[in-house]
Length: 322
Image (cartoon, rainbow, N blue to C red; front, side):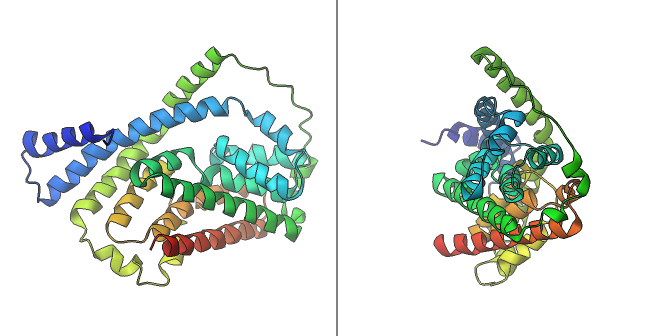
């Protein structure tokens, strides 16, 4: 039995009994979608963020930096990408972390594997994909995100682009960080509870807006309207989705409800996920932040390599899940 089935019953009762809307009406369909998905997403968010916070308490930023400074070659890219999953730093943390990594002697390519994986393989995205589409899609998302992070880091490392990092980054000396004291389980649980309050408090407006837009699309946009331009029949649907996603700014909590509706309307899963990855991992605000430490040419390479990786993954998903 679906654990969220009682929420569906509640949403149906509120929409069709309390508000008296007709099940076949566009407004009724949109409201029912909204009343079911919003609490479902918020519950999933609270649970997964709590669990991830427990994991994250074992990987504070300085410990992550120290670990990566000893990583080399391809093993370093893999380790950096895996650390990126369990250390979900926001884009605001990218600049000081990048400075710390480079100053500590972490190879540039390894650093980029971390930077790609951290926002792209988002714990919120994983749990929401699992809740909406099942474990297969969630696993494919994790695997494809890791592939992009590892490959892009290796490519950037092979290109030898250290001169395209702003010179002042290499002149900074942060010194050896003090060892982070081991936390007790009580401290970890307290941290996780506070982290849930902090993150949910920040992202719930995105959840409401994202699900609201999805609800409108669910009820009012004809089933074949989006599929006509971004459906399986359009060979350029994936790059178009990426181009549309780059100028947008949102997080996974706001985008995934739209992914759900896009696929429901006939858009291929690979195309919808390419759109989501572009919004989350290739946003213009991220480029503006990274400009503080990267020269424009390196930002262009970073975006280009990631865009190609996302495009390949999009087409691969479309082929595998056809």
